[in-house]
Image (cartoon, rainbow, N blue to C red; front, side):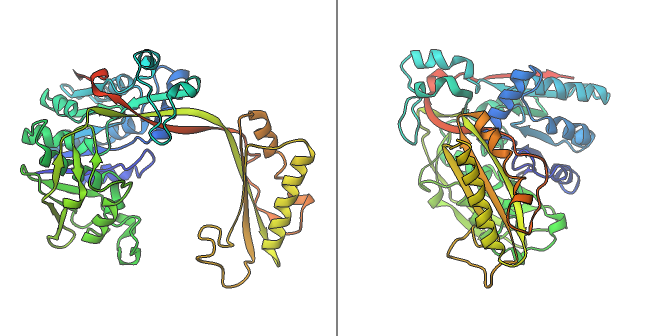
Length: 449
């Protein structure tokens, strides 16, 4: 049996979670998931400005904090913190180890997922990289592409671990793959061991969002205790693919069949065909059993052969947007907010400004749920939030200049303007596509401090 924990559900998750996971209980592997589709484009822009950037810098700061604990407790780390620049991340980790006087630390790196520089060659080979949602060929927005990364197999992670890496860095691996890699390495699962690979995928899917399976974001939130010390998930895995989801003893949170079930349906398409680079998992085969306090056993998972394609996450520039808000308070707050919004859009139109998209909402007046839940009485304060999107950056910036004037040229009770004028920011759109596996080649490298 091996213990694998996930201490980072996204770039911005609690920096204390992975530290606590290493220090508060037994562990063999710590996984850290930093990447989302939009994150890759942000990292690509950072790399273009500075070739030494483009990875999750938070990860390096974390390594600096916990490296002595990792060495003392013999915990290995697998993280997709490499982003679009795994090499720079690897060098930063090695520099951190050397600065701490730690010699002999092996750090592995998986590359090959970043195909941005190969896009034109791939298109020239007759691969359209068509949008999976609407079928459009990538050529329609090729000039706007910012990042293109393949969700690669988990087996290169296992290879890096086989070569002795204590820390393994990847670019755009799948989220569950951070768990599958260590399981393949530890239990020597083969590439056609479909049921076990499916089990590893389910384990990784359950823990990929961190505390979201241990009580965070749980619909029966009032049953959760210890919010200030919420435990993050630990998988206790067996060679046959069965595993238990739990958390460190003494931590807050909740691990039950309900909390696990809610996470299982997170980002779920067809439950019979959860497709990853390594296997097609059947989520309808999953069996959940109560295995004691904060322990859920997961078993009987079935898998089918993998597809012959990888999914590609492509991000592109789709214009610019800006949003701002004001608080309107006092009697007839909602009516005054509506007048304020009408005044704003009317003034912009008189100035000759129209936009591709506009948005207006009044927080506090039932905007989130609409007619499902409405206020029992008229609100005494609402937040007017307005926004625009357009291909013209200058127009978007001009929109931001018209919000603050409502404080003195709108109805009474307008306040809450802070943070300066809203400025245009890039709108990053997602373009999912498929690529033949034969066109993607990963590489594994291990270096030592």
